[in-house]
Image (cartoon, rainbow, N blue to C red; front, side):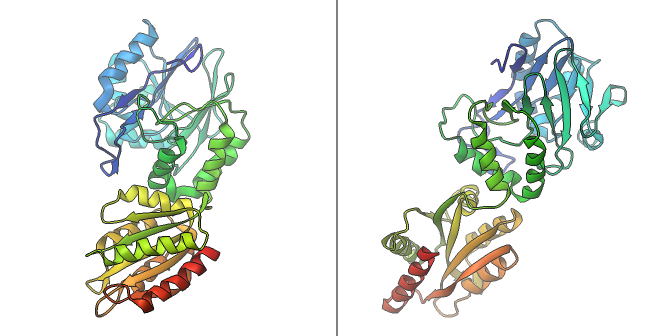
Length: 386
């Protein structure tokens, strides 16, 4: 794939992987993106996961057409991008690795290699001339590791954005909705680090960017403001969509019935966008994505062992670790003799920033009755009006 006459895509698709980072479901696989700039000097922009190194090396050699590799820019040391570095060094022992101080510390932790004579350490704003192309480096610590940096190529106005603007899904898989899997990727992998992302976006705003080359997902060339605006919304923790996310944790089905009925009540109150998820069966990463996407959330859960049903606790643990904030949340609990779910959920939510608990909390005793239905009707009206 050609990005331009002199910038080539040499990455690979991984369609056999089941879990990305051993936790995120990727039914459409994932791409490991790597790029090659051909000039007086040749530069590889990141390698790929070791599991796909053979195909990557084939792509690299075919694109080089007999030339050697002068530089390897290491944007991010995570193994899905650095896994083939030793393979590259074996093929081209004179290659110079370009990174920052933290890059080389981490590389030595991951790999047993002597690269002391093959290192070019760069700092914020440093440039590297390749001939007609010039690379400029910008540090992006904690997006989402401390050594991350992005690279701007000034002649073609390309931003090599590391994990920024990445998404799940192999490039060979058709996917018209970039935002869906990019959102799930962002909030589950980068989401905790909104402030560093905002810092990087401010740096990027001073650059004339015509193309974004991420380490996962498609190269972005058209309507870049759309992608940048979404990243600004996500990283500032603002809701993307007006709507209500109803997440429930039900043991025997009564809480599930209550959650579905509550969703219907919201629609009766004029709420156009209501999404309902069964946390016991859902992909937790998608539930996290939806929690961040919408401006309001309703949690309906059974009490369990004087706390809350485990899948709800797991979900709230994920939200807590991803810095969930700036949202309004309503609570529905179910308990047959000593309801405890609401107290537990509220306690976890109170550890998060700028969370407003919408009162009143609804308590169901075993199953819905006339009284608890009326309480839900009242709550639905309040949630819809928020």
